Length: 144
Length: 250
Image (cartoon, rainbow over all chains, first blue to last red; front, side, top):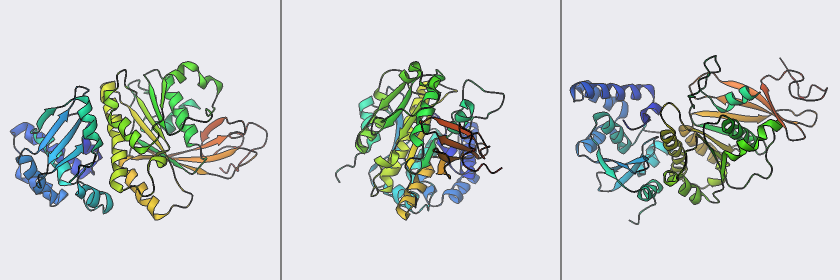
């Protein structure tokens, strides 16, 4: 896992689940069914959508020569969202609405996909220049 | 006093015999208080304290240059320490975002403490929650990047001061609870009844899950000097003259 575990700021149950999954993957290269069930229980409907995103290789870890990194997730709509590696932030509308305003969900499906792909060890990787990484972090709104 | 101040500003570091040099930085801390409650002074004191530890530079971000350097003891204003504090003054929210996002482009040693004074000046009342979260998250991400550069076993601390209104309205409360998601540790500065020409505040530290809550009294003498003592203040702790100052109820 790159850097400190971002899951450290999740509730204990979620954090434990993710680290148990990581251990299981290390041992047997697959996620046990019980973990998948628990995932649904803890994260709700985001869990299936997140797993789907991971399966489709939608998560990319982007780093620059400085060592700083960020994630981008190709959403189901075809839009790309930017997720921070170190704390819970995603540029998607669901994060702004469900997570921040309504406090309905712990995470949006993109953030969960990022954590799952860290656990399962299957992110795409991309290198960009330091300046390009700055622009990605700025997350300027694109013209629709 | 220095030890007490360190503990105020480095939550998570146990004040036990094992004062390790590879210090645990603790979670990001939000320093909260009304206008004139001493946040800038405490932040600056933290900068001086950290600079004195000799582990590297300290980065202090604020909108305007400090009008006067908050004073502690003369020893603390050692020019060598001041040299280790890098001040930057991003004028607008966009400038601050640009600074944080491009922090990895800068050459030179990474800071091991990142301080921001006046977060409220960068968050207008009508700031969307997502924009406020973006700024908070970038502060954390920048500190995390510095931690990575500083090396394993160490890390870069983050302390941000936010001015709160005396009577919070609902807009403020929403923004505050959003910020608390990103800053697990908080230190509140509340005014207490003043005595004999000094301004006195109660610093209430919520370390965010690591270690117990703690309280201190912070007093500013008329000459600007700041003294810190455990709460509740004992008679004579707060004032440098004979009067016992604000009621030191045991």
